Length: 474
Ligand code: BYC
Image (cartoon, rainbow, N blue to C red):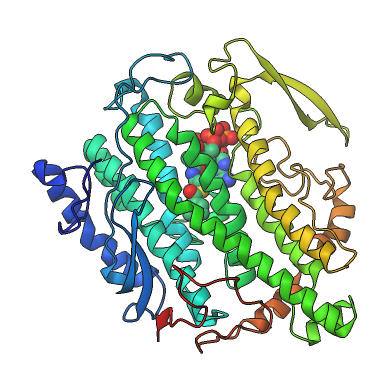
């Protein structure tokens, strides 16, 4: 196993010290990253001690160490999963050939664009979440937010390393740019839609970590298949960190639902006003926030039929998540069916080449994965004897990218008129009153072990510590 040099200015397991030029370039970028963290990272908490886990190795057993660290002292660095000897390309036109340690010239701009797009989402999410620390429902949650934030910072480092190490001057310029675009900025926004959405409440944070971080999981899995081995290795290690972010989302939403169910039982009611007065989030509102963040995240997979995606697959740039489980890894003549609007207010089937449909294949795998948590939440609702079911909306609903962009459908995906959509959208998506209500709940709780009234405590603390542990020293 490769050793991590944690003493280096930039912790790494890529023998950075042996490449002085690259090391100097990254050491030059490091202060720019630190200023970005100061200005755009979690506001007002940089001096606080946070109980964080830090990567100290890359093997599955014991890669993390836990301890109190002020966030700016976090050991952001470069960690690649170990090299697999004799690894071969597993899909596309180069299938069976040796993987590449350098980017082939003809694919350089495609790789650069994808690495920049991936890299752009990481600091974007930190920017979106920067004010949430002020309204954390508990110290446990506050610490989880900060853990997610520092790890997204590290994921930025992962992409910046690739840009510096493999893309020369262009790469260095792109790395600078990653710190100058900002989430929601009118002039220089982040690249992908979801990462410009404002996030001023913790229900959205949990939805984001459940749904949007899960897009991250699927995109990283696609890169983990890449013929460009350094990209595959860096994303494989990122996936181990990403798992915690989705855990925060799934358990966060689960705890909100649990608390609501407790109060529904106590008061013996499902009346929305009564529940809101009692300070918990009614289930229909949870459904609306889910509708919003799930559909926004669906757009992140790109168009149903995409020649970009076909090229990425053919050229070995980006595979399908868990490529090994598919039977055909080349898909040279195969076809698939997608649904598109028929131009007359309905829908029709369209046959496309499987290569063109790679985004849709990945999106459908993602939807299946999203449903795992939804099923778990519904089981809790059922166990509580409440007659309500949360459902993911259809993938045609509220789309801004792809075949259904701008088309109006109901949450079941049936095409409807714009007038009907406008009339009903307040019942399907968070409306102003819902947002005002959620906002009113966002009060900071700082006593160790105490939770805000709208969320149940977690089942257990972090790293075998008690829930009452002082996860952030305020
Ligand atoms: N918003 O052929 P198309 C994560 C653009 S999340 C705005 O349909 P393609 C994380 C597209 O760029 C994972 N624009 O799409 C989560 C293209 O633009 P150009 C992030 C969009 O190229 C939480 C045009 O529309 N990683 O890690 O097949 C916290 C037509 O594109 C959007 C990646 O995304 C959108 N939603 O696929 C922290 C992986 N969607 O070229 C982190 C890298 C599409 O015409 N990116 N467009 O200017 C990719 O693999 C691909 O770029 C996409 C799009 C899958 C996003």
